[in-house]
Image (cartoon, rainbow, N blue to C red):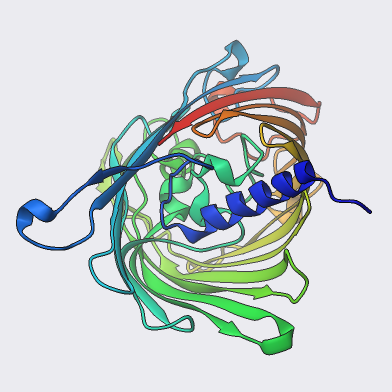
Length: 408
């Protein structure tokens, strides 16, 4: 088979985009020749390298024909689908890196444009096998958790929402703590990359967890506060000897997590005993071959209430996707995913959601990405906004997602 220059360019672009996103050395950079803004530090009388600034702004549009999903007015079409960030990085000494990012987003009722410190960390790499990172770090889990806002890293507008819910990024993405990481060579067997972390997760009062808790409470009860919870976990990636093929496994534990510390009732504040032991597992596979990207992941979550008499909840989700880069400005992809919010209720459409998606991605320039995506969905297990969707059934429904991102 003859490989033309065009095919080589597409293969190179595909591998570059993936490696670029996974490096996280410029977490929100655009692909290709996008440039950073540099601020020299010579005025401090030092020879330190300059500060590198990168950023992006995304605006999306969501429309669904039957339910309000990811927003309270998507049946009428909603522009409440916005993200923006500005990050800075510095390499003050050899093998040392300092990074920070300010981030804001609005997805329906989540985010509400609150500006947050998305991450702020310092890391030191002793060698390829051992590195250490501390501060507010990005938590590795699966293919996309720590790069959810890097639009260049994927074809799709919406990642499979059973694993990467756009409303829950405040809960899943960042962690206040520390991490060991590195890559261990396995000679002819490839290499093994690892991450081990521990710290505290700090959910926002405007995030997905708060929305779900609020949705589960009676209207006369007000959620007053959410407390941080301890979390620890890790991830392994086996980079096989086959170029572009890798397999991953990740997991986390939230021991005795109690998120709702206080709720306000007509009779005064109460402090509920709502502790849960949470265990999450996720298994991943990815293969990059020429212009193709094949991915599949499986997610398992076990919620064990600490209170006596309450039953465990098992959550399961999976997806398989394929995408093809035709040339440097056009890519198309599709995925199918299923989510079960309670496997004991797997036949009840209120607890599952099945989604088939088709996405088209256009890269008019190195700093501008435009995506158009259609979804056919059955089930309502991820709606959350029950007050905006009083009647729910198993009838299939459609959703349109459009998103454009400008980066520097």
